[in-house]
Length: 594
Image (cartoon, rainbow, N blue to C red; front, side, top):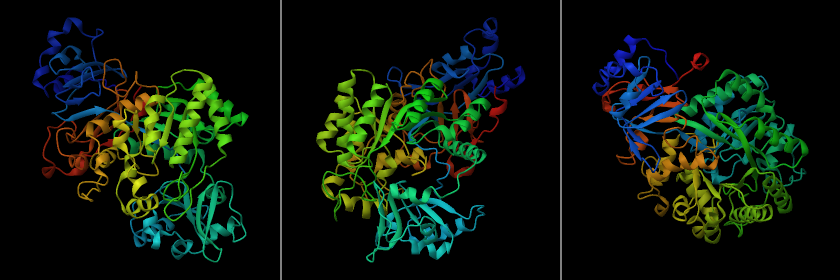
């Protein structure tokens, strides 16, 4: 953000760091020339992500770009009257975080995430039910299988709290839901209702629906929930972006598999207001309907970035491990191979079409059969349509076989992973791992295997499936433990990666995955000024510093989007300072920033 400052204000800021005192007089003859900067940041520990200059002490911003990266001493030539000069007091600076798998789902709230027990889930559900609801519907989510007795969700646990109200509770991975008895009745789902294609209505021993819906069966109830208004969606996106910038996020890859049309007015409103505080790379669905093809072409042409861009096609091949809907080569422990969400021929035809159209293709593939099919289909399309820079992606890619893992690099495919999914909570330990069995579990969530194979790997949260907390995700990738250190040594510790590797996957690798490596991803001269200032040096200290660290400042395109009270103060120990002061507060002065 540009700050218009008078000479006295600038002089006060300059006294914050002696190295820059007197520089206005020294450079007076060159005032306002091409080397002037709007902001200069000095006395920092900068991890640039750029192999040509891995570290730096200072950087300067003019407009929305970096014009200097180097030493604090050399930064002096960019200081002029009106320059905002900030001493970062030795704090760690990294490129802005890029969440490479994120969703704008305003109807999906996840207050039940990490409930851990049935009592806690029902306590939270009771609070949700007490909120006003014009439609009468309760719509929330985030539950996990381990929170239910015997890991079996049932509508009776929902009915006990909500009574005769319709309730829709999405599971934490977004591919299954448990609904109340009233919701089943409104959807006319009973013992005689057939399973829809690519979906399953779970039933008890007597054939009665339990209230759990999987795959496409979720839509039997979902479509009954009244949609939000445009103003409600706009408010939701603004609020969600506030959460994102507080976690240091400057860019998201929005992985929709549906039409963008309903949300387009919101994006256009934000563009007109200049209120995007997070860049967005959007996807549309792997759909051959003529109106969907026309929409994908229009969006790609009209929105090339750098704030809003389109050009990715998202397809969902299968479900999830926890719900036993992932498409597997061999049965789950206990039976069942899952299933593809559409026929393989339909998928292949759509993949070939959009590849021929020059789109980047991203395929949700979790089971090893789905992963193999994705690789085969993308390879066949590339062979048929000829060479080009594709950068196609496989999203989630939970359990690749060794054979298929080895194929990824040679085909130039990107592994889009979510470190939070390797967090060893009760659902992962008692449901996910049990369903896979030891052999497949040893190659699941194999973050280190992708790196060792030389595959380009990018990290995301799958928000709102899991929180956007990047530092927490890096901690999981680095330690493979819970926050309190369980299990000792880490869960499948051979899959641990370094902090630097995790940072790379959240920055420059993610920029490459959206064809934006010339714009963002590293702190290099000429690139957009997207960066984060942290309270702890996560590179120099133990992995526990990742849990203590907070985001003190987030900057997107030179504009401060989130700032802490302590950013301009010398560093002090966390024990002598309230932690709340270290948490950055989203800035809402964007309307006057241009």
